[in-house]
Image (cartoon, rainbow, N blue to C red):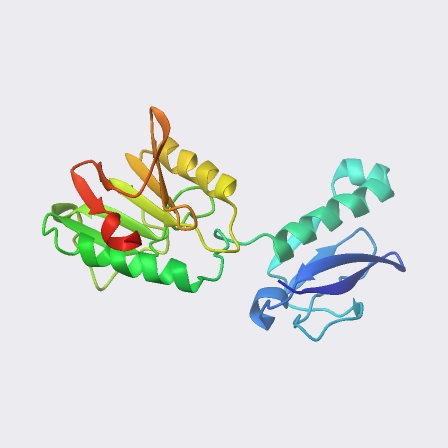
Length: 235
């Protein structure tokens, strides 16, 4: 993702940070830093075109406030560093897990998986459901017992609190297998019974449970009574 350089003013000195481009005005405008005896510093919209540092020096309705601590007052340099870190966290850190762009193979495999899963009338297979784990984790497919899925169309969940029986991840070209296996372990730690991590290049399926990670070739895989024949996907 492209980054835009911005500058913050601390006591007349400029301090630079990089912020991921693509933040909307509502997300960034309103950030203000309060320092002892110093003017507030606001932040404005950041876009792909911000290739040169932009000095941000105006007042805005504060959406976030970073107050100077007692320790920071005794050590101004430390205070600036603490505030800079806080600003970077607000501007850069995503509220939920960042999703990689799906490749063709990724989309094709997810579609073929869902075709098989939809033939099982005992389950609900939900694509791209964000689970309430840390900042939010979003498996490609989350599978629940049918009786446990009862949508209320007057209320919704940005992060669904109930964990699935099975979560499925398909690796895209831009993703790292190790990262997704770490994600599978985190899902299991939060009571997902099993996670399938599918590696298309080698037609390999990694199955993560509380007992560890097992690796399988393209074959019939079953977890928690849920079956998928990967020979029908990979041929």
